Image (cartoon, rainbow, N blue to C red):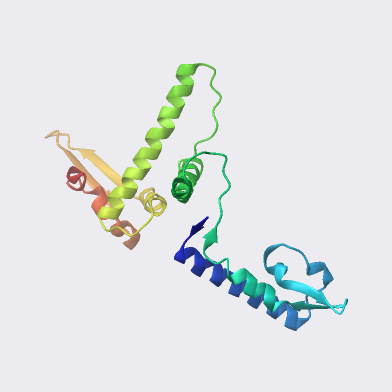
Length: 196
C-alpha cells in the first residue's frame, strides 16, 4: 500500500467533481433506480423507502478515508517499497510504448529470421533514443514545446541549397516564414548542435 499527497488531492478533486455531477442530475430528476450500481461515483447512490433514489453522504465520508492510498497485489518476493517504486515508474514505460506506436508510427513487422528480428528491434530502439534525445535538447534549450509539436512545425520548414556554378560554393537558406517557425529557429542553426 502506498500513500501520496498528490494522489490524495487528485482523489478528492475527482470525487468532488463526480458528486457535483450526481447532485446536478439528482436535482434535475434524471437519476432513476437503473443508475444504482458500483460504477464510478454512482456507488454513492442508494434507494430509500424502496422508491426514492438519494445520495448517501455516509458513503462519501467512508470513501474520503482512502484518499491518497493505492494498494498493489503482486506475486513477487520483492520488498513492498521496491514494488511501490517500480510501479510508480510504470508510466515512463507506458509513455515509451505510446510514443513508438503513435509518433514514431512503428507497426508490427513479421520477420522470419533472428537477424531481421534483431535489426527491427534495434531500429525501433534507435528511433526512440533519437526522440528522447530531442526531448532532452528541447528541455535544456528552454524550448517549451513537446517533441510532437516541434516535429509538426519542422515539417513545414523548407531549407534551400544552391550550388553556385562559377565558384562551386554552396549556399544554404532556411525559410522561417511564420512566428511558429521562428519559435524553433535555433534548432536550424548549424552552431546550435555543436553544443551537444
